[in-house]
Length: 343
Ligand SMILES: Nc1ncnc2c1ncn2[C@@H]1O[C@H](COP(=O)(O)OP(=O)(O)OP(=O)(O)O)[C@@H](O)[C@H]1O
Ligand SMILES: [Mg+2]
Image (spheres, rainbow, N blue to C red):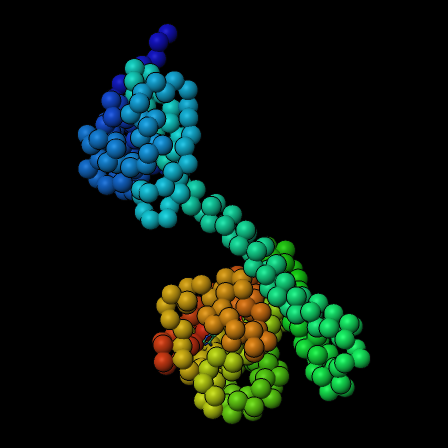
C-alpha cells in the first residue's frame, strides 16, 4: 500500500511536533507549525526559505535539492540572537523537505560554561602559583644577599598567596559538595534569627574596621526555616561580607527577616556604589567579579555568590538582587518555612 500524505495529514503531523517545523518545496515554505510561526514570524508560509532561514549551510541544502537521506546542520542567525539550532532536514518524497529546528542554545551555553570554568579555575590558581614559585626561588638562590626584613616580607607574600590558593580550592570543594547534594532538600528546622546573630557577630570586627554598623531587623516570632545550618551560615557570611566589602565605608548594613506566605524573606542591604544591570545578571557566575583586582585585594575568590546561589537552589528558595548605581544593593533570599510549623 502506498501511503501518501495529503495537506491535512501533513499539517496535523507537523502541528504535533513540539519543536518548530516547516515543510519546504522548491525553495519556499509551504507549511509551518505554530512553534515555527512563533519563532520565525506568522507570515512565513509562501515565503522564500532564504529569507526565513538565512544561514548559508542550511540554504545550500534546502535550495540545492537532492537531499535524499536525513541531514543535520548546526546553525544560528535566526529565531533570536545567540540561539543555536540543530537543523534536521528530512526528505518527504516528491521534492518536499521537512525541516525541524531543535534548540541547542542551552546545551551550548552549558558546554561553554564548563569550558570557561576550567579555564578560569586554572587561571585563578596559576597566578598565585607563579608568585609562589618566583619568591621561593629568590629566597633559595639569593639567601646570602637578602636581609632579615626582606626575607620576612617575601615569606609573608608567599604565605598570603598560598592562603589565596587554599581559599580558591576550599570554595571549589564547597561548591562541588553543594552541587552533589542538590537533590536532597534540607528539612531540619533552623532558627534563622540565631544564625543571623552568629553571622553578624562574626562580621563585627570587619564592620568596626570599616566604620559600618550592622543593623538587624528581625520580625518577632520568626518561624524556623527548613534548612541546612552550615550552608545558611555560609550564605549569611558571604552576603554580609559582600555588603561590608563593597558598600561604602561608614554606612550601615541592614539584615532583615520577615515571613511572607510560607517563606521567610531575608534581605541584606548596603549603601554604596551599587551594581550596574549588565553585571547584576552575571554575579552568580563562578569567578565573576565586577572589579577583579579590587575583589582579589580584599581576599575574594569570586565564588561566594555562586555558592550562595547553589545553596539557595538546594533549599528550594529564591535569590534575587536589587541594585541601583550610586545608591546601594539589596540581596533578597526566600527560604521555605520548616514543615512542622505549617499547619
Ligand atoms: N553588595 C555588593 N555591592 C556591590 N558589588 C557587589 C556586592 N556583592 C557582590 N558584589 C560584586 O559581585 C562580585 C562577586 O561577588 P562574590 O561574593 O561572588 O565574590 P567575592 O566577594 O569577590 O569573593 P568571595 O565571596 O569568594 O570571597 C564581587 O566581586 C563584587 O564585584
Ligand atoms: Mg563575596
